[in-house]
Each structure stands twice: as C-alpha cells, then as structure tokens.
Length: 311
Ligand SMILES: Cc1cc2nc3c(=O)[nH]c(=O)nc-3n(C[C@H](O)[C@H](O)[C@H](O)COP(=O)(O)OP(=O)(O)OC[C@H]3O[C@@H](n4cnc5c(N)ncnc54)[C@H](O)[C@@H]3O)c2cc1C
Image (cartoon, rainbow, N blue to C red; front, side):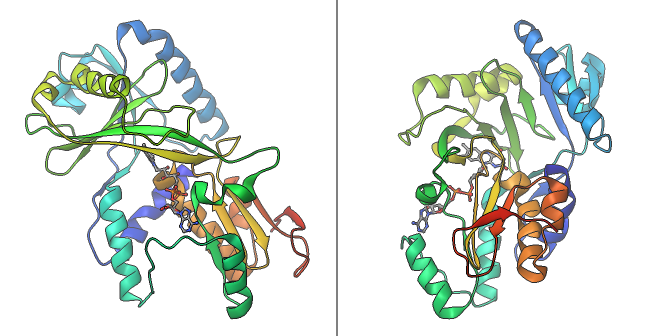
C-alpha cells in the first residue's frame, strides 16, 4: 500500500492549489552499538518483506564513508547504517491546508466542531441518496466493536527549530521500544517522533517520552542541543487488531474507513483510489490487489449484512 501510494503522491499534490513539500530521497537508518540486535532483527524483517515483494527497492548497507557521502553532517558519528532508497516524505500540515483550499475551490461546505453520529449520517444518506465516507477515527469506535475492536495508540512528537543542523532526508534511529524518526522540513524545522504507547491517554507529552525523543535527536547530531522546542504534541492513532486499515460499507452507500494507525499519510492515496474505484465502478479490484480489507453490503438494501468485496 505504501509503495503504491508513493507513486501516486506527486500527481495528487500537483492537483492541489497550494504547494506541499514532498521529496523522495530515501531514508537513513542508524543505531547505537548496544542496539545491534535490534538492527539485525530489523534487517531480517526488511529481507523478508523484500522476498515477498521483490519489486521494492533493496535496502543498502552503509559504512561510515557511504553514510558521510549521503548525509555529510553525520560524517564521523556512526560507523554503519542502512539506506532505504526511494522512501518519501511530505509536509503533513501543508497538505491539510492545501486540501482545505481545494475543497473551498470546489465550493464544498465545511462544518467545524459539529460532531455527527452514524444515525445522522445514515439519515442524510437516505434523504439525499449520496455517499457517506465516515473517517471519524476513534469517534466511530462504537461500530468497530466485536472481536477486533478499534483502539487508540498514543503517539508523541516534538517539533524543533535547529538552524545548525542540516539533514537531507528522514533519519531513523532504531530503538528497543519503537523506531524514532527525525524528519527534516524546509527552514531547518525537524519533527522528531513518534512514541508508540498502548494507551488512549491524550494528556500532554510525558517527561520520559520527551527525554527519549530529544536524546535520540541529540545522539544523531549534537547541534540539536541548541535547537529550540517549538511544540510538544500527543495524539491517539485509531488502530485495528491487525494494524491494517479497513473499509466497511456499514449500510448502503455509507462507507466507514478506519484503522490507519501510524500510516495515515503514508497510505492514504491507496485507500483513496480503492474507495473511489468502488464508488464509481462498484469494484474492489485495487483493494484486493493492495490487500486492503474491504467489506460491502451483501445485497443492496439488506442492511448490516456484510461480505468481503470481490472484484
Ligand atoms: C504522533 C503521531 C505520529 C504520526 N506519524 C505519522 C507518520 O509518520 N506517517 C504517517 O503516514 N502518518 C502519521 N500519523 C498520522 C496517523 O497515521 C493518522 O492520523 C491516523 O492514521 C488516523 O488518521 P484518520 O484521519 O483516519 O483519523 P484521525 O486523525 O483520528 O481523524 C479523525 C477525525 O474525525 C474527527 N471526529 C471524531 N469524531 C467525530 C464525530 N462524531 N463527528 C465529526 N468528526 C469527528 C476527529 O476530531 C478527527 O479530526 C501520525 C499520527 C500521530 C498521532
């Protein structure tokens, strides 16, 4: 899904009325000597994915010199690393602003701060005959019950301004509990994230998480010591048991799209295209091809009788 989405982002962004920073310069993966076991496990995981999906670009081993050529500001700091070519990155905030501008261009009415429940959406659908795309995340938890309930996974990020640091591409630091990334944005801004905690606590960032994220940044480049902390943020990601996204036609022409977990921006073009294919052609060919679980009404007007969508 991610690889497909990566190929779609340039065209999608080109259709927006405002610029959105996007680059496909790959990712560098680093680890401390004491996390060599984690690096071995991660490499084995990449190898297994590469065998299953041979069209994916192969990870490249980096020695100190190759790393220095790729990211000059990291020269002399790490003796080895991995390079994942073609991985991409975009500015999520610019994207949301550009999407809103596009909606306004189309004259779409946008309502803020007005919660809807499923019954209201269903009533609207029946009245208008239109489509409802329910993307309420944890707000639609009620309908995602059963054996695989929707849950929140807490994530925390730090936003830094570090004029003395230059990184060309996102850098990930392997960590025993979760991989930490440092994503450069234009203007020496850096987003360092993200924790992954099995909790629906939405309170502010903890001291422990802030220490972990900031220490990771400092370990990658000591000039982060003089960075300014612009924001500390926390949120919960809507997550299904298998950590995969899912689409369910809860009643005719009412699709619930959820479980994007920590991959919302990474995979949304794949979900977008799969959903549009169903809306326009009643087909789930792409969803099947990309392994997106997609359940539809077994028979029109049957209500609540679901079956997997087959093309
Ligand atoms: C810390 C953190 C780090 C992340 N890092 C990455 C990353 O590196 N790469 C990546 O691709 N993605 C990342 N994400 C994004 C994440 O993957 C997505 O935000 C997530 O998958 C959920 O997206 P969503 O739009 O489905 O749901 P949400 O983002 O949860 O949005 C749901 C929206 O529905 C609204 N809502 C809820 N109830 C109602 C209601 N009753 N009526 C109307 N509106 C309602 C909510 O207010 C919210 O605005 C990160 C997220 C977090 C929190």
